[in-house]
Image (tube, rainbow, N blue to C red; front, top):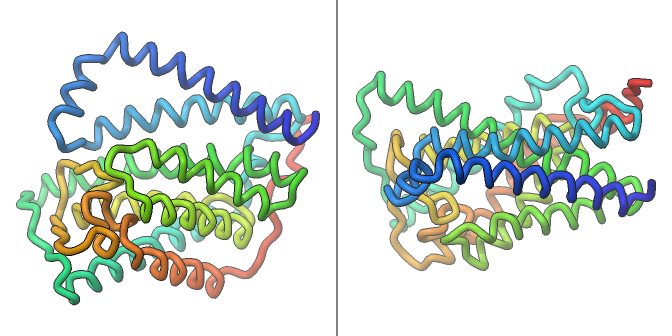
Length: 288
């Protein structure tokens, strides 16, 4: 099967299962979902349900394509023996980049931190719940955009042309979120390229998953910033931005700031310096 048809089949299966899952959820949990959205601050439970609705179809579509091609489902970025190290590297670089960005804004008088007011045990509970929710986000979205789809397009177009396409799709998908801005769209596209670079550099998805999960965890729990216009419940700190939106991110969150671009560049440099170039893992993990 040609590259384009493989990618199209993956997308069709994924969208079909997503649509079916959304119909089932709307029928079974419609009032709960509407109440969660109406509350204004999304909690980790809502995010966990939302990300499972993406992760399960993505895993199913990936498994189907792996079966059709006669390879292991782990072949598309999850194979390899350095998962823990790469996951930690991605997470550390994301938190360092996000902290540097927010501390820089605070030093310039463009924002301030205030405590979230959580009791210690409550904070620990939220930290764990948000950690699980954000790990699901990283797994679901990296498998979706830089798993099978990246590998299928890359087989015909080359890695970096495929990365441009998947990064554009990544930015467009997030652009549907309320509160997203033009600067945020550019930052998301750049972040997609950074995550693709992490895949290219490390040979697998774990560094990208760690970066994605930790960035969201930092926004949703640790620093309490907006995330694509959405505020979250149960945050350790609150970061309140004040100033022009293109500089502070405004209601979009840190990814809406032009200063996020050098922060992402620094994270890419950290990955480059810490990990030697490795070939993409799992290309020949056959099941037949």
